[in-house]
Image (cartoon, rainbow, N blue to C red; front, side, top):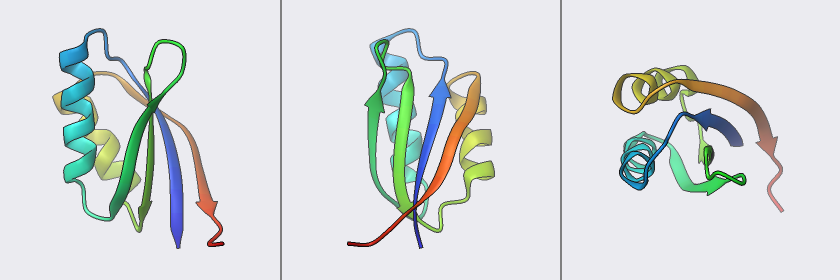
Length: 77
């Protein structure tokens, strides 16, 4: 089951964004990751069996305040 996770991460500089992307990319099950939003503060993660709680906690530890905005299943085309 593929899932799409959108998280709002407190990232106030390019270095923080890079760090957040690295943290997410290293998580198991992640297929792709991208930045969204006017301030590029939303992380969009697409993956298979990603542990959202673990991912959120490691982002909070390594980058800053993180909120899960949405979690949805992606239907395979």
